[in-house]
Each structure stands twice: as structure tokens, then as C-alpha cells.
Length: 331
Ligand SMILES: [Zn+2]
Image (cartoon, rainbow, N blue to C red; front, top):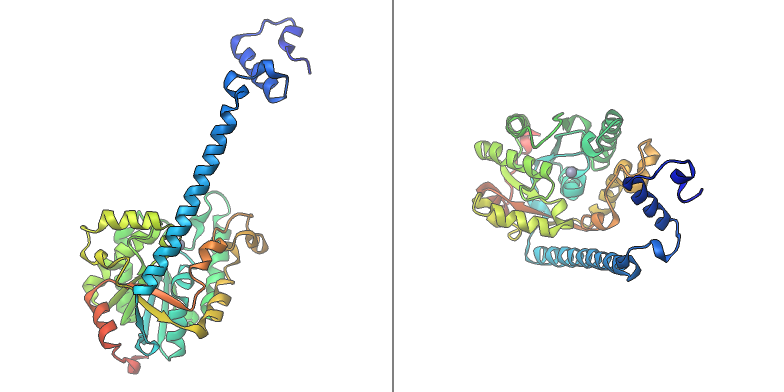
């Protein structure tokens, strides 16, 4: 195609057309004369190089922080014997998969020890990919949760769906739902995502559970999901909220660790049920590639022989110190 086609057609080029042509000509490799002085001097490639170096350095800092923060938290965490696990456990998760990621081992060991476990999931995870196809995503994710919880030994009738579309906009409603759940399940321990989790849905659910549980008094523990992966956001939230909530001062230290070497394989199998979330495997369940977001690095924080949770209220601290009171007759 001739470079100055407008002139060839007998039309005078306006300034916009000329700029456009000049840019196209440069992009097509029409000689040094068409390039800008900055580009000719290599300023643009240098900027690109700096940007890549900055991004790589940030990733390295995040990785280093994530590894060292987790190591320190686990090193300082109190070890709680498996015998101290609750016999009535309620796990509340914002999305399908959080219950297994954050509490799979604890749930597995509780069931194995003869306890009862309920799982309540606030959304069906349809918001993970905006746009059409959300109903299919919800359907797939609910089916995956059924399989994953069954692998952990949780009864299907004990898996509850709160059916909330958006957690940050429904905090008051969540408080009522959690109160109803606690009333129904009568757990001696509730596990919920941390108020300092970098994911806004996770934090909103944590706040709602605090409000609900402070009125009903079971032991409340928080589990962290995205903070292990993104420690900078986690620490920023902790600093921002440390005065707003006295119990938030327990984080990130003062953690409790439940060790279950025998449960890791089961947790791994339960997690593998979430094909839609494991990156490329989303296509295997009929969802578009890229639907899932759980990278290998993310999962490496959770595929361990112990799980860390953070006590929130006095009941949780008392439970750690004195052990769980048996409530077997209610089972
Ligand atoms: Zn989540």
C-alpha cells in the first residue's frame, strides 16, 4: 500500500491523517527518518527495561516477604494437639474453595475424630468472572464444593449456601445469616476468613462474623487466604485497622497451629476437585480458559501438614488454653 494514499487519491491529507500515517510508517519499519529522536536514542527500550526490572523486583520482594512472614508466624504459633479440636465446627467461607484452602485439614481431623462439621458458603463464586456465563460458573463451583467437602468427610446436608450476590454490599444481611447459622449448628468453634484478608469479600465476611459471634459467644478463629500470598496488603490492612478492633491486634502473631500430617493427602484430593479454579484446568469443566486463578505459588502456602488460625475472642483463647469441652451428646 502506498504510504501517502490520501494524496494518491487526490485528497489533501489533514494533520490527523498525517500523524496517523507517520505512526503507521514507523511501526511498519519505514526507515530511521520516521522515528522520533527519543526512540532513535533508545529511550523507549530503556524505559521498558526499567519497568520490567521494577516489576520483577516487586515480585521478588513479595515472594521474600511471603516466605519469611509465614515462617515467622508458623514458628511463633502455639501448637494445639489434635485432641483439642472442636466437636462442633462451623466453617464460613466467602467463596467455594476457601473452606478447603483455609481449613481443609481442621475439618478433616474434626470429622475423623467423630465431630460434626458444617460448611456455609456465602456466594456461589459466580462473581469470579464478570459477564455472561455466571450461572454456569455458579453451577460448576457448587458441584466442585459438593465433591471437595465429601472428600473431607463432611455430610452433604451440612453444606449450606447463603446465596449472597455481593458480600461487601450485604454485610448487615450476613450478620443475620451468621447468627442464624450459629443458632442452628450450635458450634463450639467458628472459623471464618480474616477481617484483614486483602480480598474485600473475605474481609467483609470476617467483619460480619465478628459482629454475629460477639453476640452468641462460640470461639471465633480467623483463617487467612490471600494475605499469605500478598503480605504487603495484609500488613497494610493490619496497620490501618489495629485501633479499630482490639482483637485485630492478635494478627499476624498469636496464631494457633493444628498439625495433621495424615490429612495432607486428603486436603490435596479435596483441592483437586476445584478444577475451575486451578488455572488451565477450567476448560475441562466447560469454562473459559483463565477462569481459575489459584497459581502453584498461591497453593504452596496451603498444601502443608498444618493449618494456622488466629483466635479472635476470649472464648477462642480459653479454648486453646483449656481444651474443648465435649459436646458429644448433641451429635
Ligand atoms: Zn475467596
